[in-house]
Image (cartoon, rainbow, N blue to C red; front, side, top):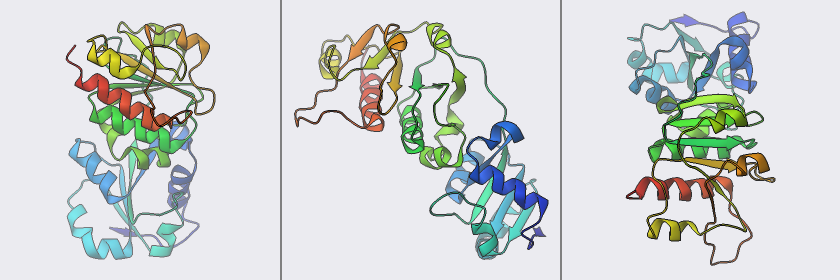
Length: 257
């Protein structure tokens, strides 16, 4: 165990960058995983931290539990650890994890395509739904919130570690998928529940979810074999994209076809 107390420690500056800059992981080749829940989720998936960082009070409570790890362990005063986080509610421990870019698109995998989604909470929520409902791959069109940013990781609650994630994909990459592509629409196409009832909703498919304000781009819409509406008997104009994704992915996961 190594104790760090100086705010000017070079290692601390690197951790702070990873924790606070949304795309720092792409330049550093590492990402910051904050909170014991996420750290445990990574360990359960067989992932190995490069470094373990925790505040003094957490080390006093649970330090021995983590000392068996082969990764070096660093302990910081509580206030210094809190200065690392870019989250509204800082946790008390974190991992520094290795990161490498994934470029290969799996053409036959159940897939979610994120088309320029901006909100980290929405992106993390959709990753969590994708993992829960058996979708293996998530493709993020350029302009989508950084998938490995601390806020998306927090919202994903460990879903990242069971998914094949590819960032900065193009529409041409989406076109290489060999499965039906489905998009949501607020004004055209059959209703989701009717497709499911009639056996016309494919289980093996790719769902495209679009920008919170602009929706799915016209060019991606042209790739879709189905444009699907979600019934809203209460009369709201539209649904939050995270909510819409949960409904659509669950429907595909539970279809018999």
